[in-house]
Image (cartoon, rainbow, N blue to C red; front, top):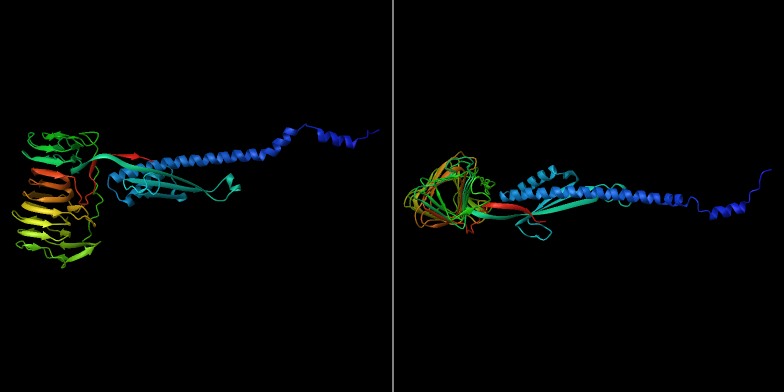
Amino acid sequence: MRPRINLSALIQRLLTSEQGATAVIFAIMMPVIIGGLALGAETGYWFMIKNTLQNAADVSAHSVGVRMRQGDQLADLRQAATRIAVSSGFHPDLGELQVNIPPLTGDYRGSREHAEVVLTERYERLFSAIFSKTPVEISTRAVVTIKGGTPLCVLALSGDGRNAFQVAPLVDVTLEGCGAASNSSSNSSISSVLYSGRLFAKCVQTSGGFYMINVLGFTACGANLTAAAPVSDPYRNFDEIDSTNLPCSNPPSSKQNGEAERSTGRIVIDGTPVMRFCADVEIKGRYNFAPGIYVIDGGNFRIAPGATVTGEEVSFFIRRGGAVNISAAIVILSAPTSGPHRGVLFSNNRNDNEVAHRISLMNGSVLSGVIYLPTSSLTFSGGRNSHCLQIVASTIQFTGSTWANANCANGSRSLMAGQTVALVE
């Protein structure tokens, strides 16, 4: 006989039984536990990406600082920053890179002595897409600056030339508040004859060595006095005026006293008057150059002995193998303080073959600006005057006593040795 089931009692037992309660709670909580683990893993993934992106921002900002120290312009800084950031894990297809000078945020906002690199990447959500469809944006930034350093008045760019920076016998070269450097690795990178030439400077350094020269009153510009790292050329991206399509003007008469014409043959480029001479320019008397850029294209620029030449806001650009030859003259010239040749007094085309330039000045001469002859040699004698001057050439020989200082307000670029790049944010 089948036993009878007491349905009421069975229901009562089921309602009061505690067996399997843990399983029920676990089943209810399992989605929450799995969701929490998934969100934790996803958050860790985003933090890992942020750390990678921060590292890319740091090394990218450092590269910007190095290129700033070399004098690169913003477009070149962005290119370098992108290349380094990509090689360090940044994905430009997922976001963008910004280089801001001055920084737009942070403690150094508005400071043109600092550069800010901002990296941003955007990712589709994983598990968290249940809660939001907005992509996850990860952004990092780094700020860099250039610290320390000593201003230079003279830099020989040649990497291996013997006597790249030479002081002639019984000649004194005095650099007031600035230093001198030679990038030549030669053992006679900075030299004289029988210790008879003397160099007085705030600091001196060479990538090579010294040979028979008295170097007085100095400290090392950077970490090393000899075998030092080459000094970067801040004018290597100097934007030479494009004069190829300008008409040729008649050069000043070799016997004429006067002033360069302000209208005939002068064309304004970027707000600056430009005149092109396609033959030799020789000044024998008194002559004043009006403000502007003077291009000597295929000829030489000569100032004869006894001449007096003046000019404010002027720049002389020598093209196609021409040379500057100033001999025992009084020359009072200052470089433009604005425009494409800002701060540049004399320059030659950086693609020209080596040319020998000679400048010999009489007492009373004053030059203000930079003499920039990156592929050529310069023989220089400054007279007994203090010039607000930078000289940057492949090789430099001082044949007469010269005084120069770096307290200039003529628009010249910063020419420094011993600078360091530092991340500050």
